[in-house]
Structures are given as structure tokens and as C-alpha cells.
Image (cartoon, rainbow, N blue to C red; front, side, top):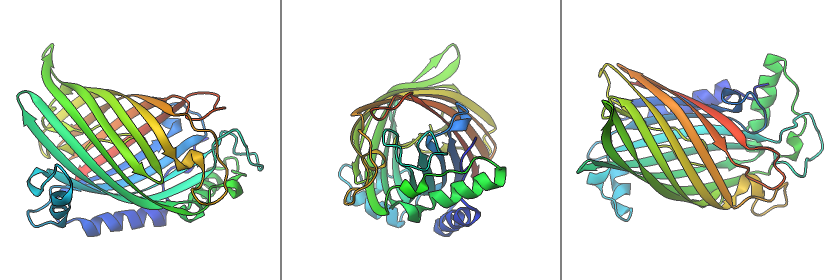
Amino acid sequence: MMKGLGLSRAGLGLALAFIAGSASADGILTLKSDNDIFASGGDGHYTNGFEASWTFRPARDHWTRNVADIVPGWDRDSLSAASYRFGQQIYTPEDIDVSDRIEDDRPYAGLLYAGMTLFSDEQAAGWRYTSGLYLDAGLVGPGAGGKDVQKNFHQLIGSEEPEGWHNQLNNEPFINVAFRKTWWKQARLNGWETEYGPSAGFAAGNLYTYAAAGLGIRLGEGLEESFGIPAVAPSQGTRVFFDKDSGFNWYLFANVEGRRMFQNMLLDGNSFEDSHSVDRRHWVGDAQAGVALSWDRWQVTYSALWRTREFDGQDNADRFGSVTLSTWL
């Protein structure tokens, strides 16, 4: 059964209030839902996530341009867009009807976060270069509300009661920074617009620390007017953008990414307290494919992601699905 499809009404209200209060100009509101049922119909591990974000082009005097000025290799003129994000994620073992700690499966964990992303987008000689700097702060543990959201939703739909939340990770605040750069080669294939190229990035903090490299492709119509590939944590997605009132555009996308994981609190357990943990695998790979459709002021995307085993003792690779709905406001 599906677990915790989204934040509570109060959490969603806070997310939208946070984003609306931050909006200083026209921009794109995006609601994103991750769930294993969207791809596999299964249960467990990264079982649900919800994120609301507001993406906009900062004014010349906006404070995010001052932040860009202090980032090595960036300046206020290179900042093409910024985004505010707010979300919640829920993680569980496979068997949620077991009350005892399941030592060889991942810990229960709720995660609540707010973040900001700075984007740079440049074009030259048939190439497009996109960069994203991601800053996140939040809380892992009971204070993130994962237990309440999942239990309330299961009561609502008459599903099995999750019994093991008393084994969840302890409260621990986190700060994380990540960077991702993608090199897109622009071309045409049988009359269709195409972009393809490699990506590289890293993350550092007490939630995740990793180095990553990947390769992606987009194929469709109106790629100049519409771009963005959603990601499933811990990977970082690209900027969501589409020209409003530009008619109908579409594209297919696929992406592979490999990560060398040095730290993952959600598997390694709490940093300063004893907690449930499993033996994290050092190398993890993702394969993703999906479709994006945009028309006038709206865009919807769907993607399915396959992920290799993340820890020793994990029986099978994981599959997740992600759905986003975006609109110009």
C-alpha cells in the first residue's frame, strides 16, 4: 500500500506560505511528489517525499545575487535563476508491520528541510552549460513528523499500521551544500531537437557527502523553451523552466548517475548518538527515464528511477517514481 502520500495539511500550508511570502516577482511554483508506488507498486525504503518550490529570476538588487558574488567562480551577473524549496521525506524498512528493530534493513526516518538553489545557464558554440548550487538545512528525526504523516494517512485509507516508528533515528539538525554542473551538446536527430552531455557534482554535510558523475539526454520539441529533469534524493535535479504562453512543447529524457557515498545519515545513523544503522555501500547508481509536457502556463513531468542496492543485506534494487506539476504565477 502507498505510505504517507504528501505532507499533512498543516505542513503543506506552511510550505506554500513560506514560498508565497518569499516570492518577489513572477515565477514558477512546482509541487513534486516521489513515491515507490509510482514506479513499482512496492513499499519501503524511500517510500514518500513531497516538495514545494518557487523558481524565479532575481532582480538586480536581490539578495541572492550578493550570495552569488561570494561563491568562487560565480558572480551576480552569472545568476540566471534562484529557487526556494520546502519538503518532507519518509524512509522505512520493507516490513512496517514488525515492531522490533530490523537490524539488517534501513532505519525508520523522517526528514524535514528548507533550501535555496542558485542556477547559472550559459550557451556558446552549440553547447549549453548549466550549474546549480544547492543549500539545505533541516531536521532528521521525530521532529520531522514522518511518523504522524504516515500513521494518519494509513488510518485514512485503512492500510496496515506501521509498527516500528519507535526505532526511528533521533532528532538531529543538518546542513548540506551540493553543486552540480551539466554540459549539454545541442543537436538535431531525425528532425527532433536533442541535448545530451555529461554531468558532475558533489555534496557535503552531515546528511549526505558524496561525489557524482552522470550522463543525460533530452529529445523532443521546444527544448529551448522548456527544460529541467527532476531528481530523487540524494541526487539533485536541474532547474525547472518553461516559457509561459509558448504553446505546447514536450521532451523525453533519460539520465544515469553514479555516486561514491562517503556519508548518508539515513543509513549510517545519527552522528552523535547511538541509533539504528546499516552498512552503507560505497558505490550507488541510478538510471532514470521520463517525459515532460508543457503548455501555456503549465508543465507536468513523470519519471521512473531504478537504484542499485544502497546497503549490505538489501534484498533488491529500489524503484521510485516522481511526478511534478508546475505553473507560472
